[in-house]
Amino acid sequence: MDASTLAISPRKLRSDVYSYSYQDDSNTPLVINVLASLIERSMARNERIAKTCKWALSKDSRTRVFDCHETPDMTILSYLERIFRYTRAGPSIYVVAYVYIDRFCQSNPGFRISARNVHSFLITTIMVASKYVEDMNYRNSYFARVGGLTTEELNKLELEFLFLMGFKLHVNVSVFESYCCHLEREVSIGGGYQIERTLRCAEEIKSRQREERGFNQIARLML
Image (cartoon, rainbow, N blue to C red):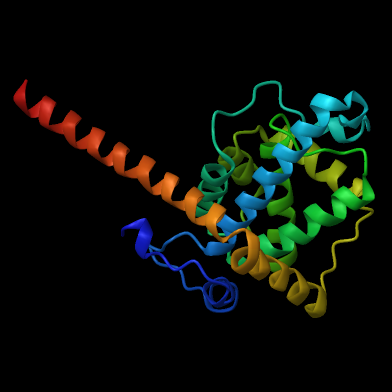
């Protein structure tokens, strides 16, 4: 499907959250694109602040547990799409994960989302949100493989995350609805273009990859 024909609207986001149905060829739920856009902007803002104020870097040694020794060569959107593709975590899980990200940052003001910690932080947050929302879940070992971590690493991150959150995981209906509304505003007011641009970039990359696979297949046939 051409990216220009994809619906980028608050109504589409709400429809995904409340009535998304899984199919093998399902498009990525819009909430994932919105969340990726929000996190990328937050990282960019943190990087600008860090360049001018060294004290603005993450100072809490407890939150450094999320820092990766090797930063994955994957965009935020690609990473979230990978999690969705292999775990089938529904759109509501990403809304709850967004609630947790906000709570975590408020409870740990010294924490800054950066390129070094964003991937491990996201897989941990989404896994915890999935356990809260769903009755049936994959094992930690499976989430770890999807996220590019070892089981031991993810187990440790989950435990640290819960303690740093103060085990405040409950999300009532009004809170869930308020965060849905915030995500909708991101689409309708300021974030629509950025989200659409991110989506188009992802579609262009996928299109190039399909073309390259086609050329490789033709080359093998000619040999």
